[in-house]
Length: 390
Image (cartoon, rainbow, N blue to C red; front, side, top):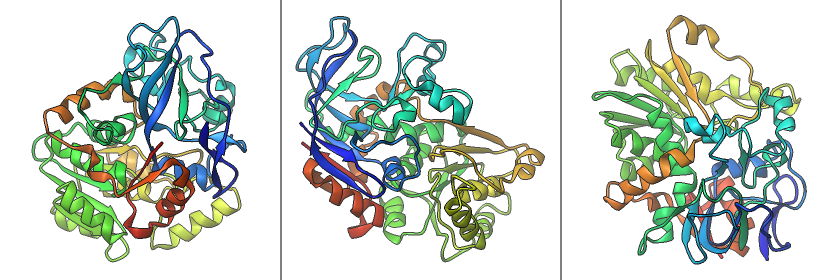
């Protein structure tokens, strides 16, 4: 079969690899019909995630048709059309029983590797390094899906792939970012990053009752998408204005009730701190650039919440712990517990409350994935979200 393989920094190729096989009784084999390039995939592409090996099949946003079913799978059958959550979860461990699926205790066979970096291991993830299990990803013609009784959900007849695909990751991730803010009527929510996850966080904040949402980014086309498609109340281009000053102006000096970091480890900024982070990263003295996170902490109102859904990999420097502690802020974060949100969000789609396909700007064939990665990384042709079809 054809699959998108990681071959080193800024190098992915579509190659012929062996077809997946049923390995465990709870597996299914899926014929992928649609998959997508995620902003998190760019962290792999740029070489910031440890544990990648040449030839690894990437991709964690995908859906398709069930082709083969393991003997212990009870809720799926051949021919079912399903969307698959990116975290792999057993459904039985103490974490899964608390709906904390992205920290499943049983799904990462390489947990010992993750423990060395993070203290404890999270769940396995499709196509996202051997640190997180070494599972083949879904940017491929076929994929093996473990614990298929727990993860995939059936897509209703007549619903196009593009409406269901993002239930695999970015829609639930953005929604969880807003959900962690405990939004109340009248709240003002600021979102750093107007990429796909940021746009879903903005739209979700309104679904959950926010009065005003403010989008922060540096690309005019992304800020325009935030205004037109996520209905944000105000946008801030951080290369043209001081974010902290502008947020204070917009909130009467109080600050947003909650701040969402939808950027993560590769943040940019116009200040000297960006140069500091880049230099420390180059010298391997710091793994991530927490520019957006620092700003979100400092911007948030006293007693507010900072919700972190941007991906971080390791250690950061110059973190404003004094601001966090002295102003009674709460930080909530995590890889998304996708299985918790898939069905409620599917129902919102069916009721017409949101059409997740609004983030798509480019549609390519699987064999064009290298071009899609380059386009997405460099924001060519106003690229916001690339969907690949097989």
